[in-house]
Image (cartoon, rainbow, N blue to C red):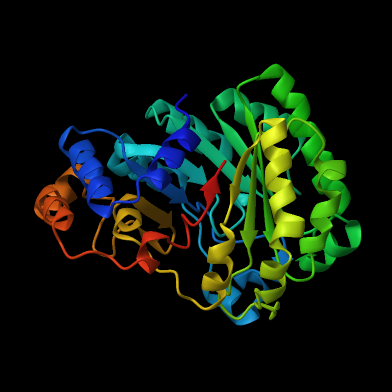
Length: 337
């Protein structure tokens, strides 16, 4: 199992855009794995979290669909051979797909080094978690927007805090059977829940391997409307910095934005970088990787040759410099400690 966080840490330390793109070009030429596949096998969710587009009734009407397993197998043949990481669950709830365990096993069949599952955890049983770990799942990420029952169930509409705590305990028990199995907590902060980080260690306890603290972002017409980062910025040293230090003491990998990037997120000053564009691959029933890519008839290799991907990557190394804003994207704006 490759340590993808070590790779990400190295990547964030390389500030020169040309060097990053040179590395990607070399990986491409050598036929090595370098893309991350972010896979929503079903576009649905059991919750209506206030900060999520699933809280928007109009969005939900158009944002739906589910892959049958036969099409997932075609996607695997087309793309999985170049994937360094497969993240199952990106904007939706993957535990609603009946073939979730088969998808994990398919990823391992295609030798993807690191497979993760992102979920709210409210639908998972201990048996399912154990089965997923046995099928090859390397990491489970539990998302939470609150560390008290009141805040959790207010921000995560239809969710139950007791089920989150129960799933957390189930994962820790499965980890005793599969010691390499990792637990990650994703905590999305806003002005209503940032101070609850004071309860963090009482709730999650020991056994957590990775913690991500992610500032709220506007994604559609969500029910939540407070995107002012000023309060979070002002409380950074008193609230967020101590969490990062405690993670360091506990030897927990911590993904946290630098203080200087907090206000940039609010002001929409952070843009996608070329590095991200070349390595990020999103797949859902609404689309697969590129707008003109057909996973039923093409593969990563055939598409790359047809569109001269190698030449484009090489040319990108010598293209004009990206702005400082583009060097830190919305998906990679974290210090990895």
